[in-house]
Length: 211
Image (tube, rainbow, N blue to C red; front, side, top):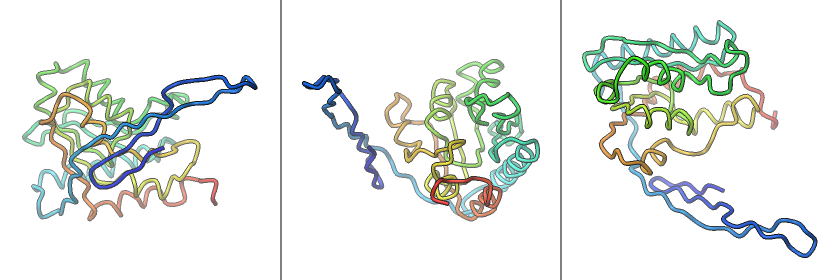
């Protein structure tokens, strides 16, 4: 169970497995609270022209992924001068249902084979949305230095619901990064003024059970 407010995620998880007299499992619970910096919504006017240009390119990458029969997600990797080094769309269906084919994880897999950990710290990922737990982990282990993203995970969840293809997690990426040892990793987002444009790609695409 996750209880989320602006600055805390409380995780209540099974800590011990006990068999009762009927041989059924009873689980005691333990509580772990994660404190993290909530961040704030970013206006386009607060971003550089380069940032805006690259975020708009990311939305195009999402559309291209959708046209190829994949899910409408995408990202790119750039240097601090805004030069695009790599682009990546979601490739789950393209890779025969590979569940790790999220755009960010695939990009980090590719980038880590080209750039050292030291070099990755100087690079920036521009992303369509807040990364999931898997993709956040890939960024952490790959030593990405900066992330700029458009959409909120909470907004995406309104579209995906519990669709088995993408049952969006209610877990902020900042909570995941807060558990690591890299407090100076830079996070910029969400950007609500671009969020609607990104989410249009998801309208009617997902089929949650409540429908």
